[in-house]
Length: 464
Ligand code: HEM
Image 1: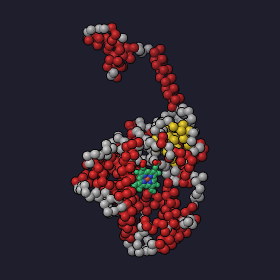
Image 2: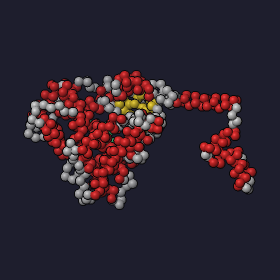
Image 3: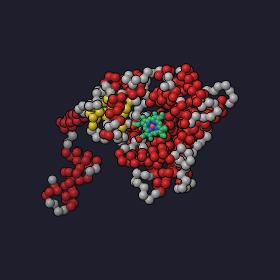
Image 4: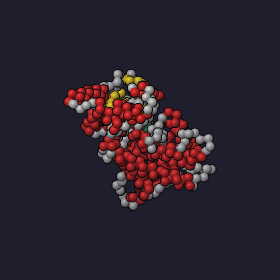
């Protein structure tokens, strides 16, 4: 190399370098092209060599892309680029649901199913034994990283649902203490829920408007009141159920839940889709709806800061603002993190609760005998002149069974929040490479063949 010849003239050196090793000197694509043109004269022999080399490398990459790591959990074959995505898609189409598709795969391949969807290694956990080992494994306690999971929080890892390690522990401990021990101001969580239930009953009465009956979209009704409960807890605000802002939030979250689930979206497994098909892959909508949620929460944070009194925290935002203003706050406490926690609470708390309640009503309608027994217990323990409270719980075993059954009906059709292997590890003897995404299909423990329940359990509860 000319560097080693000790040329003193910089001009001469520059000329030599651009002529012979321009690519090293400049690193620009243009220079690289010039260098390539000088080096490889375009004749048919060279062209043949280049094309052959290209095909060889491509073939090798394709071959490697279909090769599974040794001892990786059993699962469908991998195709280049797609992995097992097409097989999952086909099963999903056939069965109607992703939980059903992956349950079928577990039947075929065993309780730990190894998939690859686009760029992601994805492991599905199914059934009690695998679930127990999964949930108690520290190696599998991480949360996924990458644009899909981080873009929602400005490219940073924030919030509670999709963070891990010390950051997550510190924030989670704080949030749980606030929610569990202290409540906010004079109200605790149970009071907030009771108060909101009261409003819901009034809303239904208003809808009935002295008629014998009325048709109600239960999920939408629950959703509004659940959002209100969460928002009261986080920001001390209760909207009327007809309120424009609340309806707006409900609409935004509804849109968001339509395009994503925790397993990901097409553009998370195939990131290139963000650029070539932003609309079709759900990316554009994902960004738009997240921005709307942020704006919504941010507007409230601004109002809170303007009216904040450190001695009288009204809600979670106030408690958190107090921490932000304290001189010895830990670095994980930031304003962005507060916004991310609020968003996570909406995400994790709204759809789960409203779907569970909807299942409850659906199955009560389908099982009038159960409905009758539940009503008898309510009349006997509470009567018709007051609302139930948590204190009634020990005296209402039949209702307790119904609630648990409704939770089973919902959770049995859902997945856990995705986990990440924080290091190379094993699950039931299967090798799980570092950074694999691991998700439990909750169907296995709630409704699978060895779960110990029958599907129509709700109809034959004895209340004991
Ligand atoms: C019927 C209602 C609900 C069900 C079935 C449910 C279910 C779940 C499940 C399965 C997980 C994942 C655990 C894991 O894989 O590690 C989870 C996490 C979580 N849920 Fe719920 N949830 C419900 C209601 C709520 C509510 C009302 C809130 C908020 C007030 C909430 C907040 C969260 C949060 C913040 C996480 C993440 C926890 C963490 O990573 O530490 N959930 N939930």
